Image 1: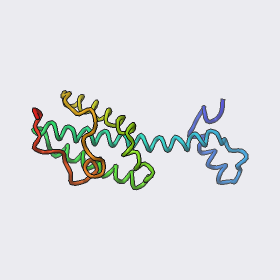
Image 2 (image 1 turned 90 degrees about the horizontal axis):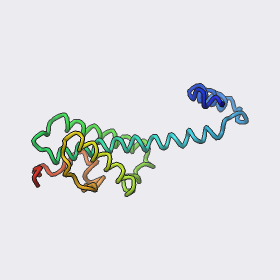
Image 3 (image 1 turned 45 degrees about the vertical axis):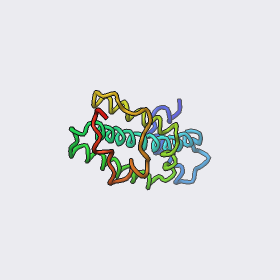
Image 4 (image 1 turned 90 degrees about the vertical axis):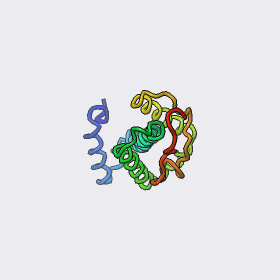
Length: 150
């Protein structure tokens, strides 16, 4: 068993020491490559989670106008800010916002969350909003005149 399999934190600290010491011949290159790839996957998961939370709250905002409040508005604004920051820090993630398969997965998560939190099951099968112009626009909120029966 490798040190990587026994204690990934100790392994990572040792690999960092070896890199800093210029001892490249001792590096566990295969596992280092896996860890670097995992960083990218982690960034994608973070974006997907933030977007699902944001979309679920936008759905709740649109379909439960009688329950709108400061808490939902704060959550929407916070998720927008954190998503914008995340995209600024990792601009290579921005194309994900236009990738149909990724958007479908994120929308499915948002729907599941909105259904679980509202008990409603009347939401659209696909995201009806544009990412940059609406979802991530700090001043945009879904049709505030829409009622649950519309």
